[in-house]
Image (cartoon, rainbow, N blue to C red; front, side, top):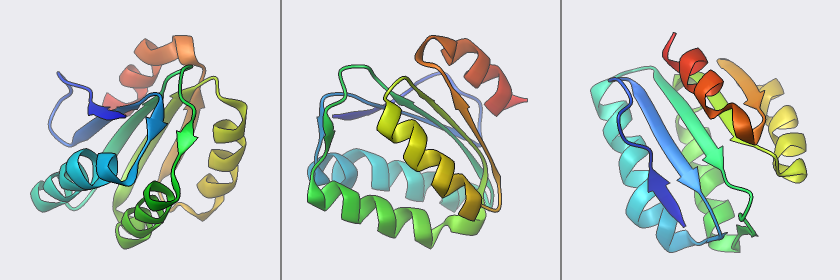
Length: 120
């Protein structure tokens, strides 16, 4: 499941993933939120929290993730990923090498620090 994180300032998109993430989650929540954010600004900051009960992405969700990420690759000003899920942390470290914007990893308990960094 993906849900928006409310209460963030303009230009900051907050998303929280938990349980199993499906293509439907991307199509009904993530993609519309990303497209709305980029319609309002050329550069977007993303706060992406992946909960400890996260079990994975289905294949359709992974495909949608790649499409959305690549389409807006140059538009991510900052990305804060908050998680204790080891394989997500490892894959984000590789992804960060290809990102023109700043990417920073935060432990699951560091949501407040991640929010402060992404909004600074």
